[in-house]
Amino acid sequence: MAGSRPVQRQRSGARGKALSPAHASPVCCALAEELRAQREARHLSRYALAKQARISREMLARVERQLSIPTVDLVDRICAALGLTLLGLFFKISRRR
Image (cartoon, rainbow, N blue to C red; front, side, top):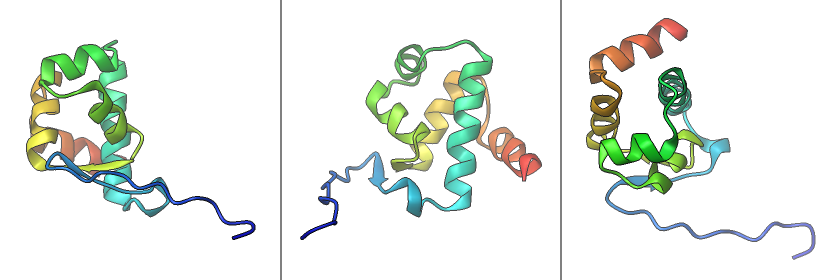
């Protein structure tokens, strides 16, 4: 079709659901932004944080770029590696809104 962009098929695995940034909910956007802000505030690379959280760097990048909706378990792993609790993370997100 003229003028249409090719559809990229993305694998949706157990670690998160693939989505387009344009379709991300405000909560998912805020979560991604806060996780990135917390990582950068600690001067951690994606690689270093992913290693500490025991997840792939690619998955962390997808979460931060709002290309995947992370599971609660995944967010909990990232929080633990950042020295945060889930409650603390969501409190920070709620204060930003």
